[in-house]
Length: 367
Length: 270
Image: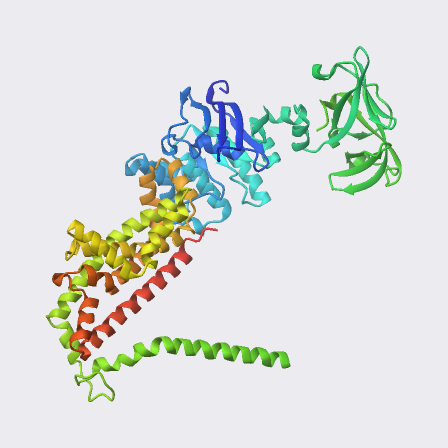
């Protein structure tokens, strides 16, 4: 079901002023039925890409295909994509029903069909009794639902969402994430979702495309993005990471050593990426996630040990953050479950942090 | 204590000059109102007696009523034209990043700033060539030019509160730009258009200079009739008409203020 290439961006370039490229070169495939999220900081090009897909911006170069047909010259109102806007963009002079009927009227449906579809759409987003109200008489969450229903009511194949939950408070946002995900599964529609909130991207998406400086740094499923980031940027952007600078040396076969300076080093007994392989000292960035670090009691063979002094301890309820300093002055953050803390884990004491080798990521160069 | 006295004195001066200014502006207007109810035929106090004869004279058939009719006719036509043109111009400017936007806006608003004598003279020569002098067509076109800036300004101000995302939303829902304009933009900026139209009407209704240049005997508008009246024979009928015009101006002002208030309260989204 996810295999067909529904939308394709081929060599798309975008510049607003003819000089600075917002999008230098973009190739992207969107599969039929998937939930794809564009994740990135503001100014990373994610919204520009969405606007080009919606037809509100025209690519400076390149092609956008929908079902293999070029659409970059098709005006927005003929693309038939549903769109949910930031701050909803509901028509303030129309009631909820009129807002939902609008796309159907534009398509020339008759009165009875319109009524039926509007009713069904309102039921889908749990707004049965709100039809006669004006958007400004609704709460933020209800307005959000109306916007969603309006984008769905004409049964588009593709729905675009531009930071739709940005204006809601945390609890409501989590609830709406769940509802949007439900709707996606129920309707089997393709969704392209733009957000700068990484937890939103990870929980909702089938695939996440991480944008940075107008380029897609990585596009993969959430677990791949999290566990196997392909660059230090991704590793640092998604979730938390300890980044250490070192140099890689090959000892023999699969035995490698990363020298972190001033006598601190990590031994790895595994294959490393081919781009890292050559024997001589190579600058590398070592990334270790705080939740992969534990307090070491007895040494396992496949584990790496880091001796630290605890400099800070922050209690966070379900876990405690230990901040340690290595002999070379680098700081390491560890997330430790409260049960595993001992009477000895106090600020100022020495501690052994352990981490299994497979959770240590190496990237060439210093980011 | 001393500081409080200073503040109090400052406030008093503030009010004093404020009231003085208002009096300065409206006393001449108020002073002539009783004259229109005079029973005598001279513009002088004390009034010999009260009567409505001048109102009767003005509103019974004759040159006054004819000129009122002409004014309303020219006013309505130029208002419609100015409103349509001004609204589209304002929308085009709000929607697109037109490169020479400032210069175009300046050009559109020029008739409001250029002295009317110059506009009138220019139009006289141009319309003479085109055979439009001494015709209602010419007068309507001239008044449209003069009234359009008022529409452009009020509608532009109104569009600044309009969320252009709504236009995009309409497009994404399948509305062509024209339909999106008529179903979404127009209803939402209607208060601005209405008050622009009111200003346009008043501009045409009060206009004298350009009318003197372009109007023939058949295009005698109300201000022109008054102007001639002052030159030839001055009697209270002109004052009666003036009071009537003041009333219209006042109503227009109140309506426009009310429209503005309404648009502010109704659709403020953010």
